[in-house]
Amino acid sequence: MRNPGEELEDAAAQYASEAIKLDSQGNYAGAVVKYQNAVEALLKLIRLYPDNPVNKLYYEKAMAYQERIKALQRLRGVYSPSDGDRPPQQDEDGNIRVAPMVETVKATFEELLVTEKPNVSTKDVVGLDDAKLALRQAIVYPYQRPDLFPLGWPRGILLFGPPGCGKTMLAAAVASEIDGYFLSVDAASIMSKWLGDAEKNVAKLFAYARGLAESKPVVIFIDEVDSLLTVHRQEVGGETRVRNQFLKEMDGLSDKGKNLQLYVLAATNKPWTLDEPFLRRYQKRIYVQPPDKDTRKLLFEKYTEPLILDSDIDMEELAKLTEGYSASDIRDICQDAQLRVVTELFESGKANDPESKPRPIKMKDFKEIVKQRRPSLIAERVKLYEKWNEMYSAV
Image (cartoon, rainbow, N blue to C red; front, side, top):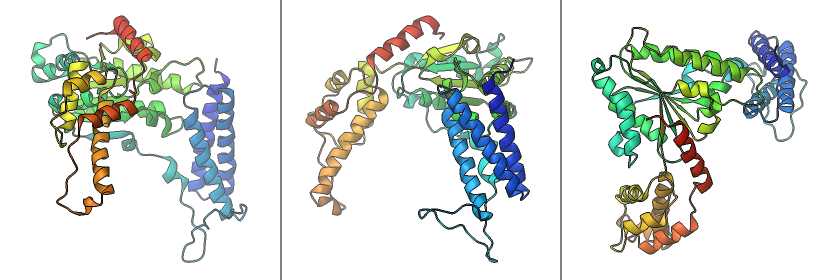
């Protein structure tokens, strides 16, 4: 039996679809009514399900429809703009111009993807040797010698761990190693670009990737996959359909007589929110952990390489001082050190001389910055990752 939330979501989608159709046909009076109905349905959804993770998306849609209502009311002489509003644009004959809502609401499928050729390799990823080996085993080796894998190879790979520790970089690097397409997908966009069409977006994504994989390896990278697939106590129907469609597409990646080089890498900072049906489809579950002391030392060496350093810099000590810091935290520390000496140069008035250079960065600078910049990682949260890794890791 359908719940009220699911019915409201479908009603909002139907009202919005009818409004856009009437809008494009020039029936602005009818469009205004349908847009208002859609707004009311969306706001009621938010009130009924205050903990729904897609409420922000519903609110943004409602605001977009309200703005369209105002534009159409101006056109019909119903809406009186406030002092802060800009006057409506007019054409050569003095008629008010209204951009069709179809253009602002109906996003193209390509907007959901970032298709790029990664310019990073696994050699550029500092540390994370276990994770890199697991990805080579699952992706690079089957790409190089598929004949050695009569039982097939993993197609679903989950990268989990704290933010800022290299999950996205790892995914891009492995795509580069196999000279493949890298389709970076915004999970929130899949849910929001077309109200009610999220499951179609998922189907289009996989169909598009399969077509590309006929000629070249493809890595689909879905960041923050938990926003797409988390099971919630309060669901309004759309999330369930999207999750089921995703699981169906993952099932379809089993060879069925074809050795398509198509991989789905998903990243999450909240692995404990994913359900077991999803985890079963991800044969590899790899913990991308915070950098240890040796890795932190290598990170400092990497990020300070282009900087001018004083001879008193002790990389070993910097690594000890930054226990609990993420890779991105360490990059930020190095960037702050750069900013500190460059600021001094500007404040002294010497920066106008193109030959001038900032002073060398001293150990004292780094120590002061570390005192002022606390780690972004929370120790208790890291323990949760470690516990989840013990229970579900599969490398």
